[in-house]
Image 1 (tube, rainbow, N blue to C red):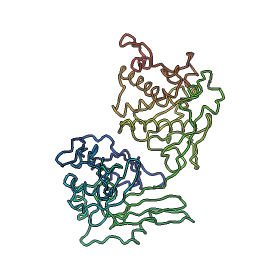
Image 2: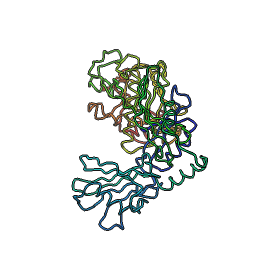
Image 3: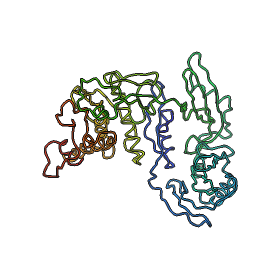
Image 4: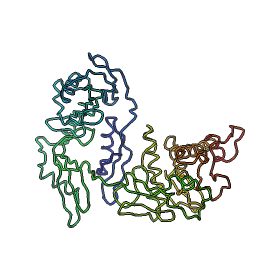
Length: 494
């Protein structure tokens, strides 16, 4: 998930700018710990372009295909399934010839003077020609046109991420209101002095300027003349990409682009009973090493705590810390349950997005892995948090219990207040069971697939295999309804 640091007072205006083109949706703007006045703005690409329509490409001789029209821009965002003639010409010539024919469709001048050729990249699919948009002789950040050409010289796709002329004009009007007549941009030296203030170092640390360029824009928003400066620092180790207003020196965005190795953690996947196919295990058993899996923990925030774009253990008391970003704990060690909830919730959310369900709880949910001593866990719709109990087998040690509770949060994100009446409550329990069981079905022995909570249930179930509930009952509605929403949930989950 893309993120950038902005001054907190700019969150609302940056959100409006980012979402204006319809390509991105802001998912959160939270204070940056330890950095007063700065907030972390998170946003994501709108994969399912609501309002964008696909139509046949017509009116161009010898060119057939489809166009995905951008509802926000009024021009094609993408041309695909293109049927063009093979060519032996150089990729750049092929791309430019096609773009000149398509110029009116994209709002470009016939001579393509708004574009500057950048490079040709080669992949297994063919060659990809990149052009960057320019305005007043300077590049616009993030504004690219890409033409994809197969090995036979046929263009099969065109991706348009240019800034519409409408936004360019709005940016110019804003500049005229903001600046005094004849205002001059900062010199490079002046811009670097301001950038260094936003890239602090400790005693003994060093800075290295990797890039400094005067350009337009900071994201797909109204272009604004800005200095783009990239500074590498030691103590702390970071690589800051900064955009500064070219006239005032105000830091517009601040992003640490240093690529770190992912954090590592140790988990059950989903639990030792299923992983080992051993129903004799109990809460007092010594769990063999082969029941554990070491995994990557994606996008753990810089620092020593388990905070990420989709889950945070921030409301857990005495949180585990690891300055090495290695959270490799066995069961019974402080931190194991935190790793369990981080890994399994993060993976489940990414899977939902991969299926196309964007905008469904795609932000960080706060979790307490030891919320109560009873054998009970819950989603709190008022606080929008998850809490897991520690009675019997600790609930956060069983990934199916984690995803069951996360299922309640998913429903509340879609329909706020869901589950306030008895039958809706039963549907919520049934959905949570189905979500957890279906997610882990391929990792479990056949006998356990229509069940959930096989590890958690070793504390209270006498069934074989032990299970919290089953998903293959022959219960019927309404004759099998009871007063318990969990039992009634088995009607829905089956």
